[in-house]
Image (cartoon, rainbow, N blue to C red; front, side):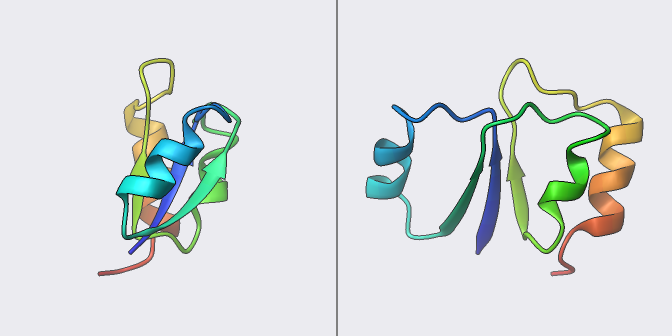
Length: 68
């Protein structure tokens, strides 16, 4: 599974890489309506507390997400 990780800090990446069997794309920017397109082609998105998960953002993610 290919996962888009938004807002992940560089010090967190080794931990996720060690304990995940999935392919992770780290996107240092916060998830917003403007950055949601960066998840294009991914199977899943990992969002953190400062990311925007409003309806408009989720609709963009749905449009560009990889169909399962």
